[in-house]
Each structure stands twice: as C-alpha cells, then as structure tokens.
Image (cartoon, rainbow, N blue to C red):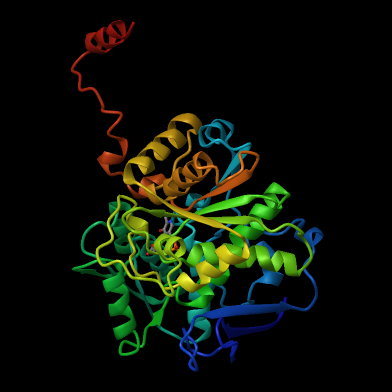
Length: 405
Ligand code: F0G
C-alpha cells in the first residue's frame, strides 16, 4: 500500500495534497508530478502470484480503496523479434505490445488511474481532446465508472476505429475544425464551465498509470541496460515511462537506467526541432501533418517533462518521414507477423535511422513500445504495397501462380 501520495510542481517544487482538483501548479503554472511514497522499499519477490494487470505493482501506484476503475489494463506481452532486430541493425529487439490493452492502446493504463481519480474527486463528468486513442480509452473507462464523457476530436484524420470506439462507448463526441492542439485549447476553455474533469496527459494522474510500462519491461526482460523507443506526440508517454524506470532505481531494484529514444514524424516534430536547434522554449507548429495521425500534434503540453526524460537518460530523439513509417510498418508485419498503428511504426523507423547514423550502438538491446493496435487505423495507403487481386474463378488463381514461376 502507498503511504503518502501527493502532487509536486516540476519547476518550483510546491506540493499539493492528493485530492486537490488541479492540473498545473497554482504558484508558477508549470506541470505537476504525482509522488507515491510507499511504506517500505519495493521488492521483486512480492510480485509472485499477483494479478496479471498493471495493478500487480500496487505499492508503487496510488491506492483507491473501493473506487478502482479497471478493465485489466497492462501486463502486455513483450515479444522478441530477431528478424526485425536485424532490419533495424541492433543486437536484439523486443516489442512491448501495448496495443493488447483493453481498448487497444497504452492510454488504458492512464485512464484506469485517471477515472479512478475522477471518482475520488466526486466528479460526474470527464472531458478530453484527442487524436483518437485517448478518446477511445476514456470513453470505455467512463462507461465502466458511470461517468459522463465528452470527447473533442479533429473533424478529419482521426482513424475510423478510434472514432468508432468513442461512439460505441457512448461518449458525446464533438468533431472540431482544426487539429488536436485546437481541440486541446477548447477543452481547457470549457472544462470548468462544464464541471468536467480533464483527462488529457496534462493531468498527472494519467501519467502515473502509464509509468507501469517501465515496470513491466523490467520484470519481463530482467534487465534495464537497454534503450527504449517511444513515439512522441503530446510528450506524455515517454515522460511517464522514464518516471517508472527512475522509481525502480530509487527503490534499488535496478542499477542501470535505460536510454530513452523519442520518435516523431517529420511533419509534426516540434520537440525534435527544440532539441536539435537548442531553442529556449518549444516553438509550436501550426499545421502538423503526418500519416501517423495519433501524433499529429504541434504544441505538446508535456514537452518539459519529455526534455527532462531525454536529458536525464542521455537519450536521443529524431524524426522520420511518412515513407519511412510505411517501410517500418511493412518490415514489422512481414518479418514478424506483428504490427501496430502508424505512430508505433514511427519508433521502429526512428530506431533504424539512429542506427544507420551511428547514434545507436549496434550492440544495443532495444525495446520499442507498440503503443496502438494495428486494427485502429486500416487506411489503404498503409498497405498499398499489397493490392488484392480481383478474380471470378479458380483458374485465375492458378494462372496467377503459374505466371509467378
Ligand atoms: N502512440 C499512440 C498510438 C498514441 O495514440 C499517442 C498519443 C502517442 C503514441 C503519443 O503519446 O502523446 O503521450 O506523446 N495519442 C494521444 C491521443 C495524443 O489523443 O490519443 P504522447
């Protein structure tokens, strides 16, 4: 059980009591971290026989006595991929299949903690902006929790599977002109008036759930002298995973901390620009554009936390073209029989690029986080390299293969 749980500003260090309804620091306006102080140090041997969800790490998570909202999120498979490792150019590669979560993305980890917190704060209504997965996940967890859910998404370029989920789980869906950043602005403007609890990753409780990916990689792989590649949009997940690894270090269960690798799409790469040009502050991109629609974000809310993760882990970040994303998706699917949505392929493409440029040591053990299920986005252009052949009878199939000889 957790002993003390509170919020702390990443900039001025001000602390806030756990049940404060707050998203950013009321003194300096910066982002907040959740701090969980367990009664004693966490030990690996306590995990035996525990539930096979992220709640197996309950000492390291905020506790919710009665009102825990869970759909069995987390403890997703970690699968070794030898052929894809060769394609990227690293010694070994493991894919962390977070598309196996209940609604098909890593967001479920965050929404379990997030909606449980909403209930704890006695909120009746929740709201989010989304490129799709956040809304799909929040919709499902809200249904489970009995919360009313409002979703604001860009009118175009949200993958059909994600929009389907938000509607299926009965959220009130608003489709807005503009992109994710515009939708996020609208959420921040109307949440208070609607008495709705914001469950985007500006909410630190979201990231508190998402940090469990790090615990699982450690437990499943048995080592942390690795690199971890993560696609970056609003900059929440890479920050959360890094927080998880750091906590394992604080508890003394690991000695080595991984190198975090951030991956963006060339058309939506404000963090890469910040990092490479050494800017003072992030410069928002007005019209981000990429086939990896989940990370089509120009003004990432959590950029400071992502910068912290990259600095502290001596990490790397790069951007890849949409063509390279399709190539990476094709490599994953045809070499390994595993795939993710395009944004997950961004991490594979970025890792290959960094190896080719000599920035990742070929001797590295790499874990790439497959953040979303491939069935979320079934756009034809992602698989244009494999056109179906239209036929009317068996002879055409036999003829097709005899021509192949
Ligand atoms: N991968 C997928 C599949 C995502 O849906 C997202 C973000 C990311 C990676 C990037 O994570 O934002 O924490 O850096 N999707 C959000 C959404 C923005 O609305 O579903 P991040």
